[in-house]
Structure formats: C-alpha cells, structure tokens
Image (cartoon, rainbow, N blue to C red; front, side, top):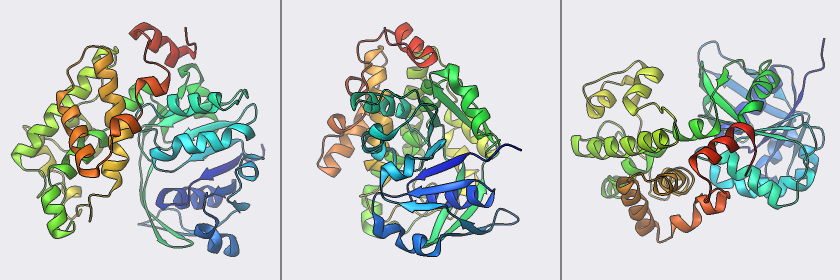
Length: 368
C-alpha cells in the first residue's frame, strides 16, 4: 500500500479547519498553516480539531501532524497544498510561499474565484520561484462548513461534484489523480477560464448586498438575504450581470452555465425567470443577510471576481456596463478603488494576449 500523501492546509478559518480535520480523519498526514499564530494556539495545544457533521458525515478528532505560522515549515514535506482562504489573500500567500516551493508539489485554490490560478502562478514566478509545481483551482468550495470554536469545525454538507482545473489544463488529470484518494468528488473543469467564469458568487453576492445596502445598515442584516432581498427589480439586475458574464465567456469560446442552469444543477430548482427560480429554492429560506457592508461579498467578490470578469469583457469587446456599475457602487460605498486593487488583466500579465494566445496559455501553459 502506498504511503498517504502529506497535505498542508493553508488557512484556519471555517473551511480550512473543516478540511484539515476531515483529511486527518481520512488517514492523511496534515499540516495546518495560519499566518497568525494566536489564531491556532488552541489547535496546536490540543494537537488537532474536533469535527462534527450533519447526519452521517465525517466526525471525530482529526489529529494533525503539525500546526504552524511558519511558511517554510508548512511547505517542507507537503505533496499537496490546499489554499483555503479568501481569494483576496492568494497573492500574499503566493509571495510568502514562492521561496519554499519544490518540484512536484501541487497547489489547489479552494476556490480560485476568477483568474485565481493565473494570479497565483504569476506572483510566485515574479518572486523567483523556478520549481516545477502545479497550480489548480476549484470552481467552488467543496464543503458547507462552519467553525464552532477555536478547535472545532462542523461540516453541514459535502458537494457531490466540484469542477477543478489546473494551469495548464494538460495537468488537470494529474491533479485529479493526486487528490482522488481524498476527494473523488473533483471532476475535470476543462480549464481555469471556465472555472473562473462559472463563478456564480460574482453575480449574486455584490449586487444583492449593494442593492440592499439601506436595509442591511438599518437592520444589521436581520432579513432573508435571497428571499426578501431578491425583489423583481433586483432580480432583473442579476439577470443583466449574468448575461454579461455568459457573454464574456462566449467571447473566449467558453459555454458558461447561466444562473438558471446553475440553480437547476445545484439545487434542482427552476422558474420562469431568476426571481421565481430563487424564490423556489427552499435552501435560501432562512439565510440572513450580512450584518454589515464591510463583508467579503463586497471586499472579496468585487476585486477578485467582478473586476477580472469585467476586465476580460472590456479587453475582448463585450459590454459590461452592469458589472461596471456594481464595481463603481462598491468603490463609492467602501471609499476605495476596486479597479486598482482588483485582478486586472495588467496585474495578471495577460492584457496583451489575443483570445487565441490566452486560450493557448490556459490550456498548454505557454505565454507567447
């Protein structure tokens, strides 16, 4: 029997703790990294994480090999590095990891949001990493999970199928084979443009938050986010954003799922339009709105998802006025420039590529 691969999980938030504990319970050697040592002190003292699950899911004490805030230590023996942080931290993690990465290591972003693997790869190369590593991204996070305490995690649900793509796509099967003993749920996501443009949170989260800004601030989020917040007019805005996203994908030769198709696939929910379909989704009932506008639905989803989508649209001749309007609203509300802070094509190193050259890059890994 082959020795189980060593996993390093980067990020000890809701998702990172759940993944680290679950991997440990499955018998893998797991190192947990968090940049702030105090945040994982109790996990380090206890030697692991107590995992609970709904129904008959994984549960028990996940014993960890190591808990650290030292990146060199975290990457030393890792075969697979699972990055489970907000995508706004990806560039910082790539910069910190660059000096310590070694040939043969696999890095998976959970999820990449939009152009995550492209950004991560560029940052590690810009910071001198010459190791032959593989960077991949998941289309969405595999768990619905929450952290119930400093050394506790709770998994509500594990998704049945999650698309994943490597950069370049020729390495996707290699990544799938590597992580299959732990996660057979991951499937071929074709390439990182497709996983990034099927990012549904980019369409739902920022617009729903910003268009209900008054309600969020007045009630501190005490209303049903997807039910009370999605009125017919708000749903029409979501439909425009979704149409722009699908058109951007089409300009790159990609057939992206529409929001209606995604709701059918993910929840077996349908309707005449987006308003009806969302209200027909029982899982959305009871989900409260964010308690404040200082929330990742804006500060993560706008720069890391909407900005790269809109940038691709502008580069390849697609009207993205709806996306631009939401980005500008976010800039005003947060008094910042998300266009400057976000994943623009210039920052990603792909601003001068034609559609053919960009496709060749994500499929074959060659920048011409």
